[in-house]
Length: 101
Image (cartoon, rainbow, N blue to C red; front, side, top):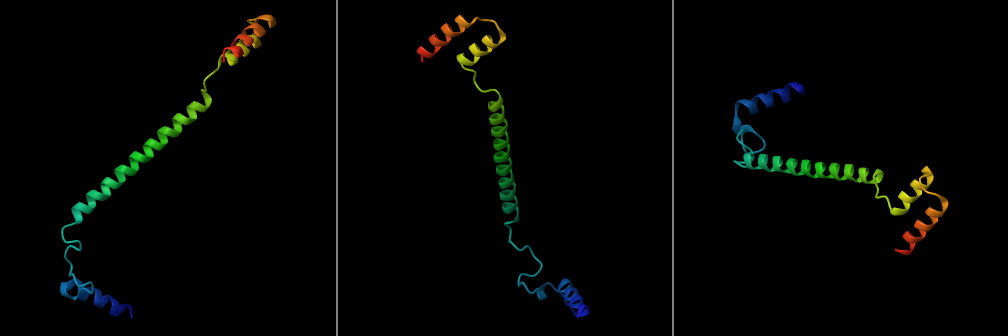
């Protein structure tokens, strides 16, 4: 059985009219090969750009998680924790901040 298949393959290789696809061994897309190649290149360029934008957005998003904006109350609490201001100053400034919102 394998020998018969081999002989059929050799027959098709030697006689282009014997190809079962009906086109012979010519170019299957009749000149569209370059255009389809360009479309495939364009497709992968677009996929690459989308992937790059997604990666950059994700990196920026991760950076924003660690560097979130500090509020005035956050800074005041840090100064109080370090001992830079007294209890009275802390309460006075905190009341001003809360009332100005």
